[in-house]
Image (cartoon, rainbow, N blue to C red):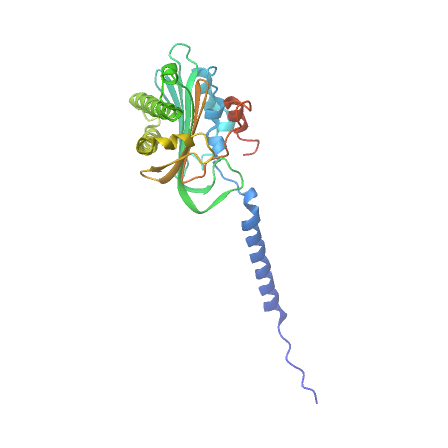
Length: 293
C-alpha cells in the first residue's frame, strides 16, 4: 500500500516568492534608478537668482524682482519664505528649508556708478545632502554635510594689471581680492539687516562658512604657492575647511572676469569649455532649472 505524502500548503511559499521579488525590485531601483532621484529643493532652483543675473547688464530692480519669479517660489512645507536684504550697493536673496537642513544665499553687488551687476555669488550648505550638486543622477550614501560656492565677478583692473612674478601669483592675488570683496559686501548687508524681514541668520551662516572657506584656501596657497597652477585644472586646488572637511576650488580668469567654483565634501562639477566655447553667461543659462524641476 502506498501512503501518500502530506500536501504542503503553497501559500507560505508564494508569499516568500513575492517578498523575494519585491526585494529584487527595490534593489534594482536603488542600483539603477539614481536618474529618477528627485529632490524637493534642487540646487538649480535655489541658485536661480544667481544664474538669471548677468554681469554688466542686470540692474538692481531686475535682481529684486527675481524674488517674485514663479520659478523661484517654494511650497510652505518645503521652505521658509525667501528673504531680501539690501545695502546701497548689494542685494541678497536668502532662504532656508523647512527642516532647517539647507541654507542658501545669492548675493549680487553693483557698480557704484552704472548700478549694474558687478559681482554675484551663490552659497548653499546642506546638513544632510543625498545628491551631488550639478550632477544629475549621482546620489550620496550615506548622506553628508557639504558646501557649494559659485562666484562670477568683474575684477578690479588694478588687480589684473599689476606686474606679477608668475601666473600663480596673479591667481592668488585674484583669490585674495575675491575674499575681501565678499566680506566687504557681507559686512554692508549685515549692517543693514535690522528688521525681521531680512535674513540675519542666513547671512550669518553664509558669512561664517565662506570666511572659513577662504581662510582654508588662502592658508594652503600661502604655504604652497605652486598649488595655484591647479586652479585651472579639472581637480582644482585642494584645501581644508575648518568646519566641514576637505574642499576643492577652481578659478578661471577670462579677460576682466573671474569665475570661482568651490565644493566642500562634494566633487567639483565638470570643467567649463575651453576658450572659444560658451561664455560665462551662456553657462549660467544652461544651469537654470528645467521645467518640472
